[in-house]
Length: 124
Image (tube, rainbow, N blue to C red; front, side, top):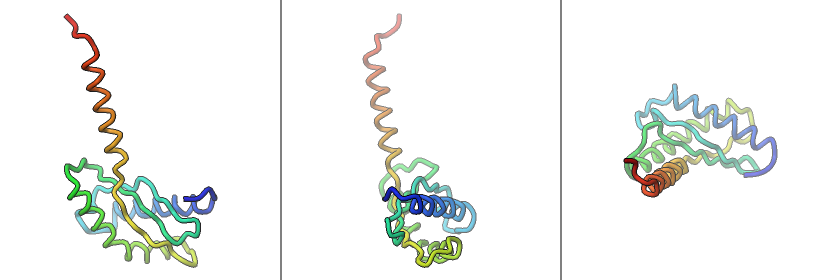
């Protein structure tokens, strides 16, 4: 991650392109219903870390790993198509990771809600 404008613009372009491809051009059912939450790109634009999340809540870690594997298996094809779309001299290498940040936020909110329910006196 850098503070430059160009890497941010390229990262946003990659995010939009991959989100579009996930929605329409990939035929792997494991990739259906994925959204791209963020793309972190290196300062030299050679690597892009793509964070994805399922629209349907996943119950276990195995399902998350399966999504990562499927997305990383599609990465070379996506990179080739992305190269034509971006028009850069060198297309960034893509690595996909499941974004578990929202899961952590949901857990914290659930715990805070439970604490609030326990601390509120019962109504009569």
